[in-house]
Amino acid sequence: MSHGLLLTFEITILVLAIFLGFEVVSKVPPLLHTPLMSGTNAIHGIVIVGAMLVAGADHKDTLTTIIGLVAVVLASANVVGGFVVTDRMLEMFKKREPREPDP
Amino acid sequence: MSREATNLLYLVTIVTFVLALRFLSNPATARRGNQIGAVGMLIAIVVTFAQDAIMSYWEIGAGMAVGGTFGAVAARKVRMTAMPQMVALFNGVGGGAAALISLAEFHNLAPDPGTLQTDISTSIMLSAIIGSISFAGSMIAFAKLQELIGGRPIVYPLQQATNALLFAAVLAAGIAIAAGAEQQWLIWAVVLGSLLFGVLFVLPIGGADMPVVISLLNAFTGLAAAATGFELENNVLIVSGMLVGASGTMLTILMGRAMNRSITNVLFGAFGQLAPSAAAAAGGSTDGQVRSASAEDVAVMLAYAHKVVVVPGYGMAVAQAQHDVRALADLLESRGVEVSYAIHPVAGRMPGHMNVLLAEANVPYPQLKEMDDANNEFPRTDVALVIGANDVVNPDARNNHGSPIYGMPILNVDQSQQVVVLKRSMNPGFAGVENPLFLNPKTVMLFGDAKESVEKLASSVKAV
Image (tube, rainbow over all chains, first blue to last red; front, top):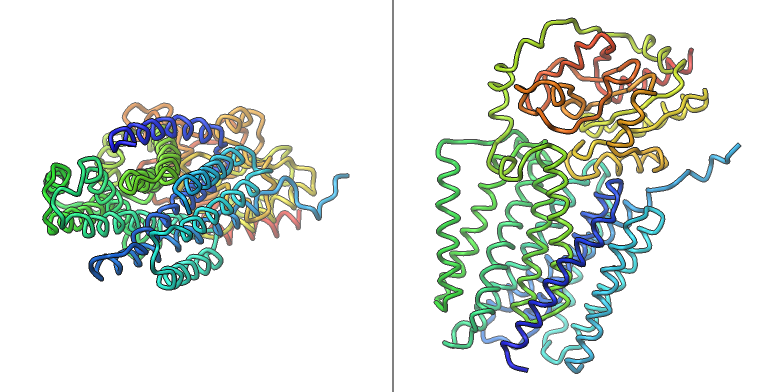
């Protein structure tokens, strides 16, 4: 596939992702806006994929490797922290606490 | 692993992320969604490890262990009241990672002339700029929320001119890169300039505007991740980044709307600085008397009410009074009083802040009412109990054209039979705006620390 054709596919995917993003996110109630924010925080931790590719590639100099590894560290903090904190938050949202039986 | 298999597995990750967001539309399924997203992330990481291009497993593994441990420990230890700064921190490191990736990519690719195609160099400069701004801006937001630096706006002469010049310079260097200039110092200039701009642009923004800023920085990191996807020709980064970008953008718009302010005004207005003069100009509504009451008086009022609506604000978060509020509500409910909570979208320091705090205190979420629902209930409410909220219940936003917050949608607590305001002192709120609610004949004030006041109320209700 030519480079230009690949780019047009990427742009197509980008534009569709924008619409998809607004579509799913607009259904999230204000009640869950904080978990939405921290959940999307975890999702942008996907830069870890980029960080791994950059850090792991065969490099001409050490500087690139070091920068790549720092990116891996930051991105893993982002991924793990983001998912764990969101899980902690969502665990707290309960309809009714179990110890209170309905009369 | 072949490129085809890789991309199909990345598609699985994309689907899990979309499901994670989809499941967030209902609090009952939200947690499951987040776990599905985490599994998707794990798939992406494993697939990336299996790439032929990856040479150094041990170094990457070590880096992941260091970052992951830090993230897990921080996420486990953080108190719910400190959640805004935690969100800012994780947002910042993501942006930082995106910026570093583009730095490394440029460093690696640029030395051979002609290897960088325009779209690659453009996305490198975009993710360098946006990622660096997001990193530095989030760190300043973190420092402000953690109170390492003052929450008040920091302003100095020619601030906006300086920022504009700096941004223009960064942009010029970026455009040079996109146009094919491949000197290494250019990318460093872009990154360092963007970092400085990120710092300078968040410094003048005050604490109460943090919900807008955090949402915007969230969108920035998403966009930086998407730009990184173009740079590495990687779909999973493009789609995931854009999902986050859409979410952050939507939250930014919603928060701006909830304050009746344009995003430009929030970002460049340095609100707290301008407000006092405007408030003075709007004066005249300050006649009237403030009535203060004892905890016993208020307790009687609450105990004999049919319906009480609690209106929490940042003051409740600062005093960490959410558990005591819940205990008071339990007491009232055991006496047959109907209790609910009215949540303003910008109460606190990030979108939905109050919901998380009250959920932590085991308040069942059906009792947490959004602004419109709550406003329908106030006319039927006996007592509105305002705990550490100020601007979001200020009737001037509805009535006084001269008020700096005029037009902001508020919780109409003054429509309930009686209003009790728990407040530290008569000092005006963040924006320095007078609040005529405090002078309303329906209103009584209960001065003191929110936590202590609520504790006293609870013990007095027991004694009634």
